[in-house]
Image (cartoon, rainbow, N blue to C red; front, side, top):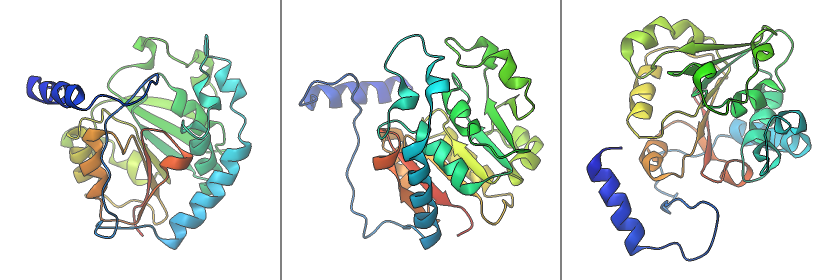
Length: 242
């Protein structure tokens, strides 16, 4: 974040202090929905209901055991999105899942937990998982044949073109990138240049964070805010070809 946005954020926080005590707070904005460019499709609602039902019964204990100490985020639901991600995989039964933003790997492990036999999860980042502090991954995760990482910046048109085949064949796409409002805009522009499978779903993390509000608001494809059943910072689901 550049100097001016940082200063604006500090001024806003100073003028609007958080009115209660909590571990972590973020500023967001409420907006009317009657003039939103898009709303949910029947298909989105149907899939979401199935995913939520799967999430209710999802067992993330094998993932949580990799955490050194509480809070065990994969087990927190609603509030965290890991069980919902696993539920979406169970509901969608994708042949290929693509994740944008590997980070420590918790989301990838949740997505992989319900992968159908023969399916694959491809996760993109600019940092190798072996160089990420406090990674959740183990070498064995990548030896099972259904998980691999690709390094590069998908907001770059040239790199995106190199990876177009990976993206054009995915059935579930999870976007958990920098949330700076710049990467996401460029990535969406690149994504609109290729043909995705007819029933592909796109999941956006952190849609209620300040930098993501405009990105989410301006999506004109069928979409549904699933924050109440996902991540406290916002979870959005898009029927890309709906």
